Length: 261
Image (cartoon, rainbow, N blue to C red; front, side, top):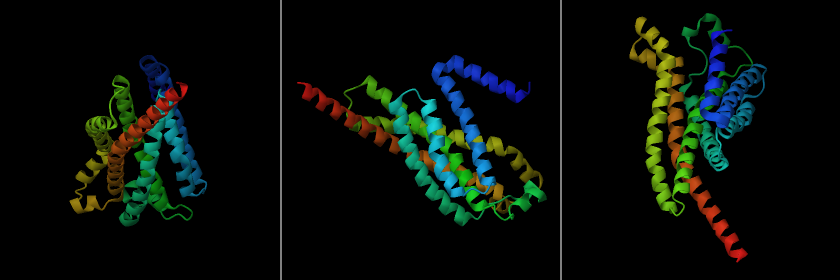
């Protein structure tokens, strides 16, 4: 048994023990998302239109992340709507910034063989960079949407008579904590995965200008900015959608109650 297999089994056991049914669903969510990412890479390598792949797999991945990892349908539905809207807005931003950055392809650190792939006909590395950036932001956006929706829904259950204005104010307070943890997660994830490259830059005496114009660094830095901007948009949007949705459901419930009398 390999170390990877052992860790996967350990993860599955711990998620089942700690999370119960929701933990098991979350494990399958991770598994399915891994398969979807492999499928995305295969489709792009087979020459399928990258834009079409992005449009199809954004909702698929969000459904897998949110609905399989959340036990409450109201939370899942609100999180999906807010995350999907933010992903579409972030996609427009990614397209614009990737056009101006011109950082698609592989840098010299990847080696001569891989750098040559950047010029291969049939591979649109510009759109591949867009796809990588969009799919990299999905996790942070979905996490923020679920955290906001779960917190506000639990608050509504604890205080059923809370007004929409108070709910939004509470959403702002929850949002500050969500933003802090989400940003730290994104930043430390980037530095953790990029530490070896930073050592490469330092040992080879790269100047600040060379680092800031290096493709690998620019792409990673842009992905961080996309994720942070996506989280910033997700927090108020999730609060707005959930507060409006709960208000409408209350109105419908009151109308039905009145009709019965």
